[in-house]
Length: 288
Image 1 (cartoon, one colour):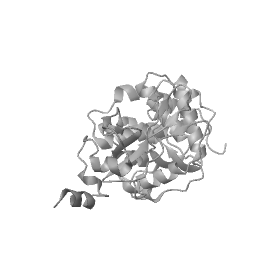
Image 2: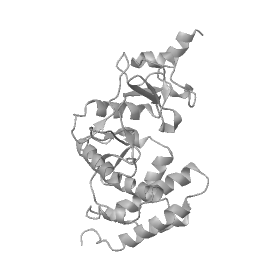
Image 3: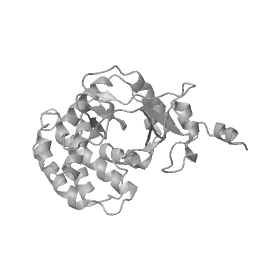
Image 4: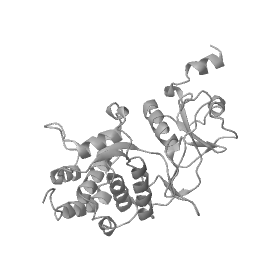
């Protein structure tokens, strides 16, 4: 088979993309990207920049197309930026298993938690009217399983993966907050640049209460970036905040267990889980 014919046959098939390989010329041409691809930090090692275009392998075509459609139509905001999606010459959002966005300047700074939360809140307000996407019913990955562990009742008799998870599940109570599309991985996906609004990138789409996004960011900051529980108390005015923190910890621990990464991070999670459980014990139950 000729190369051009082979590439045409793979036009929408992501399975052929070699792990960590740069985007081939066919992909660059499809998105109008110019210049030699340069690997960017993060993105599981598979994100590349060519000129002002950032490219990475698609990890779910339905999700990529839905997300691109929403972001392409999102009005500009003085409170946050987004990486606008780039369409192919024929109007699709995917080419040969790759997706693309415009490059946005900035760097992550996981110590600027308050600013991350504010950017996330502004982003969530902007997408609050977007309906629940159907791909969520079909998505199946370790993060999705962590999400289900955090929010849904485990099947009867299912083995609890760990003592920490068991303790969190025992302290879980109903949350009545309204749900919407939201970003569940904010802390490492907000970029800061002098003179510009924070940029919200790599949208991890879930249908949960909007305040759960900041709760996940706060858990990540306490577990991995040295903050104590005083950080979490800055948002204790948020309804059901303790339960949102609890579910954020379940989300992270449940994903960790599902992926099978070596050794659950008990040492770093244990004090955070202890503080969460103590905190939820002081919260007023719903309707009180």
